Length: 489
RNA sequence: GCCCCGUUAGUGUAGCGGCCUAACACGCCACCCUUUCAAGGUGGAGAUCACGAGUUCGAAUCUCGUACGGGGUACCA
Image 1: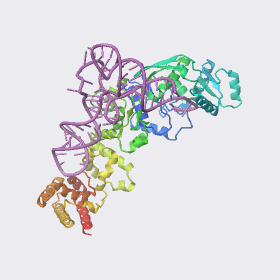
Image 2: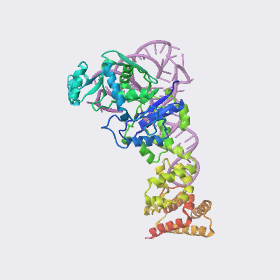
Image 3: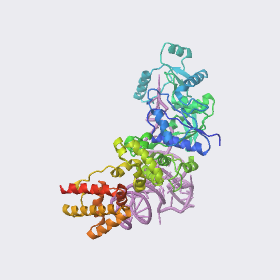
Image 4: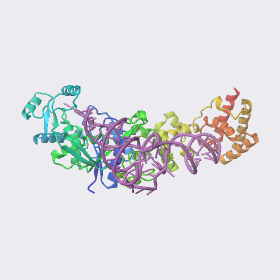
């Protein structure tokens, strides 16, 4: 195989989304597999659509997912700069070269005139498109017009007939009639290039060997190929990736539960899990094993496994995979990660209440009960902050409140004894409560349910006996007392 | 409108002319385990392989057509 050089070339028009990250992931994996280079290039040739901060977020997203690139705007490289707005001279020169060679020409039609033209074409039942207005005007005339201050663009001269074909490495041969392609703009009136020009020049200058990009580019590939031809340079290989949709088969958006990569980070997803899930969208390992770490993924990644039909984003499966990754973590690892996560995702007051030393004991208890980091705090909050259970929660089978008062008082007494005996191991707590339950002839779930509600303030909690041990018997007693008082009033 | 791409259970995929009365995973349902919730285990429902023609002894797999979905058709990328 030739020297593999691939690139991820987002435009900074918003926060990076799943689809973009998947494109990055596949490019990255391909480069890693063949010991090639992975390049980040920022395509910021549309200054109107630019969103502040998105370059930062793109880089942050890549870092978070550990998709490390070998060359890029922030780290440099031999073939930079890697931000298109810093390369405008190259594009301008090339566009002029194309005029010199007779393969491009200037045009001074304004956007308003163009849109009027399109309207006319549509109402006349014709296909809308540039009609070649300036194609045969003299260069002198057009230059004169530009000098007078008319906004002028440069358009590529597309042959009026003939075909352009290319081989997509996954989909096979694609053929396009050039007669269907109008003379498109390669350099805008503001002097900046369009995607078509910039992308071709940069892929060539940066020695890109393979272009893995979204399916939305298929139709413009012949345009790019034409530029390659006019410039007499060899195009890279192309592989178009299927799109990712939401449940209703429309373009993925927030409504579908998809978030920007930055939000995923904040919502307690593990980058390794997200990577694993994304890898499965539009690509298949062709085996029964779907859980794979990045090394396995790189090893297995190939074009044959790429699918050609769009896939639909499924937040449930993503969540499941995240759970798998959480469960496979070491307790200590999860503990560190959780603590950091809590630090930046709870209020100051809440975080201050968290006793780090208790976390070591708590984590093993909740590890298999959470599917993402944001579920941790609600589950462990009671260890640090007491929340009164509602009166409705102080139930025990069909016992009435006076009977429940007796039961609670009894538990309190038992716990007091344990405090005096200085043995608060959960095995002992369990032994005592089970024995008590037997004496009372209650259903264990009713009995423990009542105690759970009083101690944790919730009907859902980590295992009760362990929880009480970690919480401390004294605190448990005080909470039981509070519920008892509440019941009496 | 025109051009291009696609179509296997709700979802992601496997399948590359006979092994397919279609497999795996998520989700769903039931049961088991169980102090709640999970996790785990077992089992189940769910796809006339979009539809119609053809090629073939034989088609989810090849060919054509239709339908549907999507992408493109910008001085957006």
